[in-house]
Length: 155
Image (tube, rainbow, N blue to C red; front, side):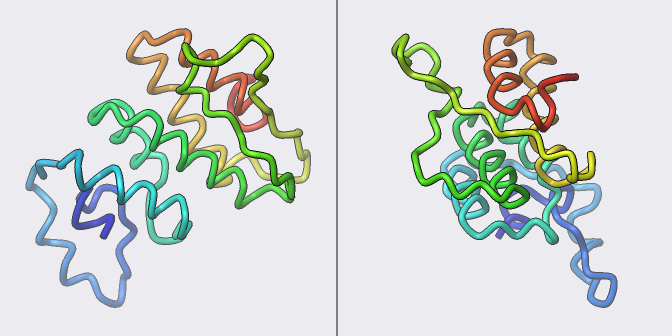
């Protein structure tokens, strides 16, 4: 599904069965926002990290499609998949920034020093923060950097 919506740039090909690979190289896909948003929600729920390039997916969702909430949802899922956080309270989304109350706190994940720096969470959150900075959305980038401090905010 990710390959069909976002193209081959966001999908890892199986070296045993790469006959579909030639079909997508060299073609520019017209990504439909109506199909991309539910696909990103499905990715966040299913977490098929070994099959998709999450950092590219987040960049396309945020920069090209302006689906910041969905991109942040994918980042939250990637962080949850590498942390042992069993906290059941709902995380506040940084993309709701103008609507947050002064008493609301954006939860940050505790730093786990045993994690490598190239985990799926590090790649996805760095892509989200970098995309916001590249587009000169400094407040949004600051909120993402604060929320995902352990995975890319310190840089």
